[in-house]
Length: 257
Ligand SMILES: Nc1ncnc2c1ncn2[C@@H]1O[C@H](COP(=O)(O)OP(=O)(O)O)[C@@H](O)[C@H]1O
Ligand SMILES: [Mg+2]
Figure 1 (spheres, protein in one colour):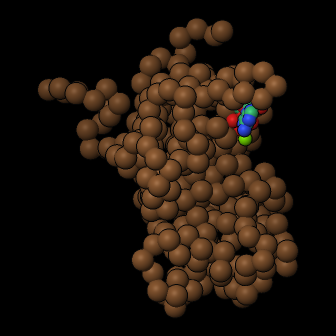
Figure 2 (cartoon, rainbow, N blue to C red):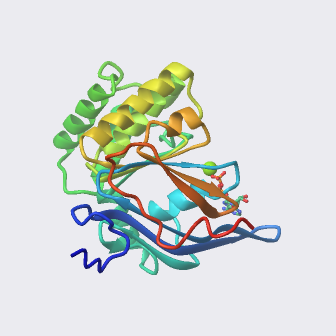
Figure 3 (cartoon, rainbow, N blue to C red):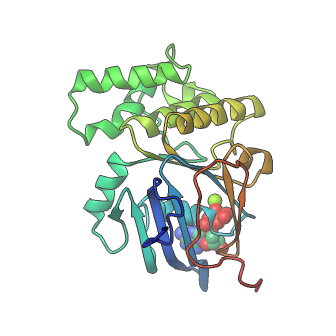
């Protein structure tokens, strides 16, 4: 009786948090570069997915499109049921501010603001009072083990501490989807382990997590690995038997070009 109207959702109870359908993205810079070429994938709510692939394969481009930082040339991107392609900047900014937490490899903190001010920044755009913003930011910094560094500025923090501030900031608006682009790329192994533990915890508390990495042992923390090469999905590797099903709308393995 599986009258599956949605081919994406192979298990009825899991609705997709993120849907990318036949997305293509080109860049014009010293010649035309195809960064993504017909990519489709669907991330069930609460799933933990890693994207792996060599440098230049389109991983960051994919994450940026899902994060609403950029728009595709063709195809559709939906997060939490809202289409991000073909919408205005304000709509994308709104979804980004409420649904999505983004952790960048380079942390992207504002150097003149303190840790607590950096973390509170996303809440400036939401309906939060000043004291409540600071309280929430301080609590989040406490959660990532930086309760004693609230008033330090990024240059006064180690790389690993900066990355933890960046994670706290990504969580400020309580997003349902957390995107992390090589979050362990610029930190030492021990800090990398802490960062991954934080992501594990986000998954355990029900967030949808999408992690880009080129390191196999990092990707193995996830429930499934999406392998990307030359702007296309080569295949999806399931790591955990009872994980929600991730599906790719059209056959990604249909021939190696
Ligand atoms: N802003 C940009 N302008 C021009 N080319 C870009 C831009 N961003 C990415 N590219 C190109 O698109 C391709 C995919 O890049 P990217 O998504 O950053 O790959 P990855 O994150 O897997 O290393 C690469 O060939 C890269 O040079
Ligand atoms: Mg990248």
